[in-house]
Image (cartoon, rainbow, N blue to C red; front, side, top):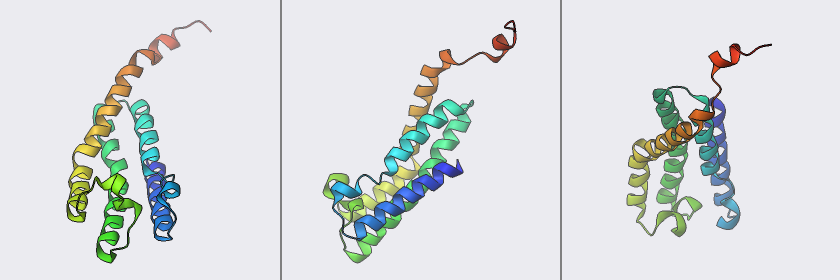
Length: 141
C-alpha cells in the first residue's frame, strides 16, 4: 500500500511541477495519477481476500490522489494560474468552486466506492481461477 500511495503522490507532484513550469497539457497528461490508481485497483482486487480489505484499499489509494488534486486546484484557484488540474477537458467547464467541491465530495464518496466496485468485479471474475490451496496440497509429489 505504501508503494502505491507514494506512486500516486509522486505522479501528482510531477504533474503539478510540469504544469506550473508551463509545459503543454499534451505532455503533462502523461504524468498520470489515474494510471497508478488503475494498477492499484487491479492489484488490490487480486491481492486481497476480504471485501472489507478491498474497501479499505480503495479509500487508502484515493486519499493521496484527493490530497494532490485539492492542493493543485487550490493553487490554481488562489493564483489564477491555469494548470492541467482545472483544464477545460478535465473540469467540464465548471467554475473552480464547483470543481474543487466536486473533488472533495467525490474523493470521499463515489470515487473510492467506484474503485471498490471495480475491485469486486475483478475479484469475482478471477475467483474461479484461483488455486485451491487444499486441493494443491493433496496433489501427488
